[in-house]
Length: 117
Ligand code: HEC
Image (tube, protein in one colour):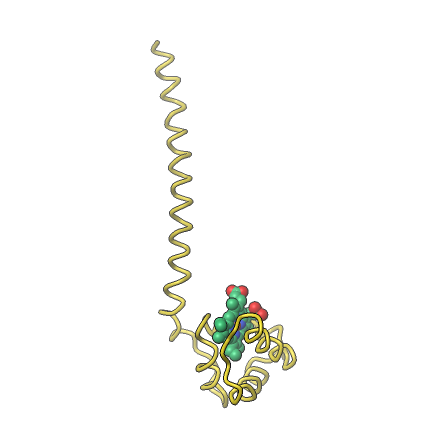
């Protein structure tokens, strides 16, 4: 009987630990979600992009959905054509309301300040 109890005692903490780990994973996901939604907006001011002609148009049209660090992250890969495609994709695929009169300034800014060298 003593062995039986010890035997049970040996498995059940493991089962408890497994349950705790699962609960932890679910909690971690919930937290990760909370952190991806809220501080993206709160952290917006922290992303400094180059001061150059067109920066105001970029700020006005490109921060509604994601941080401006998307621009910095993609600058090694995109030339002028690439940036043009990004702007089109933001509009067509994601429904970004980019003002028609701002588009040239945005493209010039991205191609000059963040174009692939
Ligand atoms: C209507 C919402 C919206 C607006 C406004 C918007 N974007 Fe995006 N953007 C997205 C989404 C959605 C993604 C893809 C999200 C992801 O992969 O995390 C994305 C991704 C990107 C990427 C990553 C590369 C890629 O092709 O996925 C870049 C660069 C980018 N956007 C630049 C811009 C620029 C520049 C502007 C302003 C002209 C802009 N975005 C405005 C929604 C938007």
